[in-house]
Length: 225
Ligand SMILES: O=C(CO)[C@H](O)[C@H](O)COP(=O)(O)O
Figure 1 (tube, helix red, strand yellow):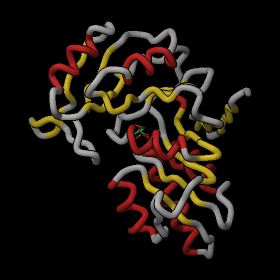
Figure 2 (figure 1 turned 180 degrees about the vertical axis):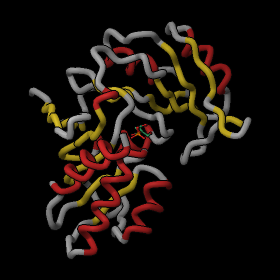
Figure 3 (figure 1 turned 90 degrees about the horizontal axis):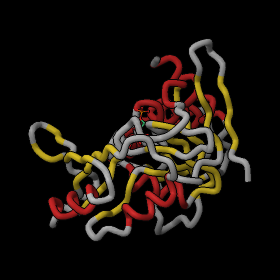
């Protein structure tokens, strides 16, 4: 599995060109893209990057990739990130690694959002993977009840017996909505709840999904406009 992730992530990182500003995703697949980009930087590739989490920021520093901020950058040329589920229309569930908010900000600011996954992430319909929702800590129980009124069961993500806290100082509620018929209206309904910061549904955002398969091939799914 690790080999499949590595191959697909490195193939995406190979597409980065000199002078580009790159969004660095988060997770075990994005790791390989960051590592490969670092190797290319050592060979002379000139890029700047914005990371989607403190973990990926540390990796960028470790691998020698120069970092910038949104104070210096309007638009990123490309972002390479993983996903927890991908449907045939390239809608995604993300946030299994807790970085969904920064991932969505960075993806939304990118000309091209490239998603790298292994083929276990492909589904006909999103929702077997519980949908991560980032909520502010104040009133989190009330926000949980409001979310559940939309028709899900939810639980706070835990880390070492405490609520998991995101890079932004918020909690994550993992929400089981069952299979999701219409991702976009659900994403909007969730984000309309006071206390919700954002959710892990990335509807109509990915331009390309690169799928690493067990036989060594890479299937490229492009979004139809
Ligand atoms: O959304 C994410 C982090 O918030 C990740 O991209 C997603 O969880 C996939 O991770 P992995 O490549 O480790 O399976």
